[in-house]
Image (cartoon, rainbow, N blue to C red; front, side, top):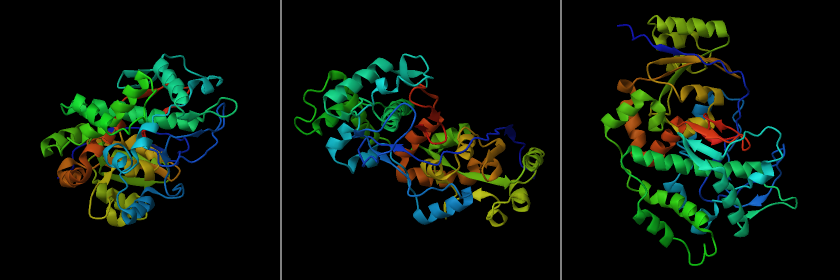
Length: 384
């Protein structure tokens, strides 16, 4: 029987991929010093970022996926598990917010009263600036001798705030939210005197973010029917992706592959015959991790080509996605159907459902960032 006809989603991006993965954490993990160019300069601060172990620019998706198999899963920092492993004081200090005044000298800055928006819900720029002043007064930010703060550090904290906003929104989708009890637990965990002298805005923002970890402790693995409904709407919503792809050298060949698939061609057969991916002749284009047919989304975001991920994240199981241009050639991508990978998705969620579902929600969210800080990168779920 021929497979069902698949809808086509065309993306043809030629921009260079940004390989650097910056994972903003609510807890400090030792921020490296970096110079960012433009109108901002470096600063010593308390914001933590985690970088990948190595640069994968020379690897194809399959090569990187083979390395990931050896390394096993690297879920990435989001909330619950990472926060509990780090000193509590550092968890609070990670709300350090870079001064927007240090970015005001940039020539192309979008005029807006918002620092960012997640699904239309804004974080006011005035609040951002007030938090900056409060944190500087509290000794959590240390500008350089010119009063300038690093753009990298500003983006790191924006990433934390955006993730916090998305996490709170995710909780509402499963009929939950941060409760007063969660806030009380967060407050009780703060060492005596640690936030004395902080403004009400700084205290409330800090405690609200830290309270999320207690709310997330209540999140359980959803029913298989619920996960199936999310997967069939947009697989990225589950925080797990199960992909197959065909890699070819030319745009013409990619378009021919798409035409064959839309005419009912068998993806596995076409991949084995056409793909230049080294493993395709055996895998039929399937990208899996050892015994599991699927990857955790953060692993793919960290290891795979940015253009590849920008195209894959918004895709649906009924779509042929492509042609997607990367430095390796042209990709044709499909999300494998639920009937084929449902058990593998559920196995992933059994291990880390709260974090993965929140990450999936963020990856699928409509995020806007004030241009003075950078832009939202869907492939990495980060401000860059």
